[in-house]
Amino acid sequence: MMILRSSPPSPFGRKVKIAASVLGLFEKMQVVVADTHDAGDPLRGQNPLGKIPALILESGQVIYDSRVILEYLDLLSGGGRLIPRESGPRIASLTLQSLADGIMDASILRIYEVRMRPPELRSAAWVEHQKGKVERALASLEGQALPNKCEDVGSIALACALGYLDLRFEGAWRSGHARLADWLADFERQVPAFGTTRVKT
Ligand SMILES: N[C@@H](CCC(=O)N[C@@H](CS)C(=O)NCC(=O)O)C(=O)O
Image (cartoon, rainbow, N blue to C red):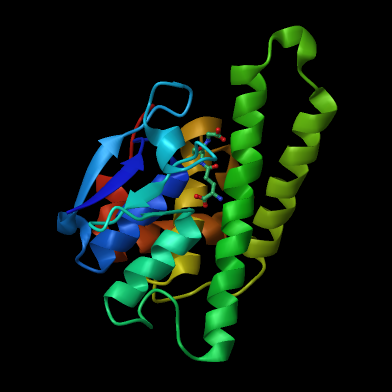
């Protein structure tokens, strides 16, 4: 049994859970909740960066981050399912994944600014800088062709990024991004694991 160190609201952990479900591998994975803020959690011994998700293989080898885990799961199921083999679609999917991961990174930094720093040390300019990344990414996505078949790493990452914006920023992104909102509804119809991995807090 593989062990996934993650936590329910983690959008990067959600990528792994959805990918594993799409590939029929979720039953081979035990999810053990990690607390990234707890120095006593074994996570820091498993991933020196102390970040989730981390996947512990049956051999004991630990792999991270979410991109590597998705690539591993894809290889485990023969390859070419989550990450297309053909160069054009492959690079498009990986680039979409990078953009979506970047939305999550910037959004998480906004949350950490509030969660980790006392009010007097917070930087409004830094928060705006992160917000700008997300706004530009959403505007770019709204204007570009998005995948119809939603089982590649780009689609999975994008759904998790939008889901994280719903969770942490009350879905404000939906106004002005109707195409993206429709795309996410379609993703949820195609990929039931998106609904089953949704959390409220
Ligand atoms: N690039 C990483 C990002 C992972 C990440 O930022 N995880 C967050 C939780 S969603 C985390 O572990 N934060 C704790 C920390 O940064 O110390 C991936 O794709 O897995």
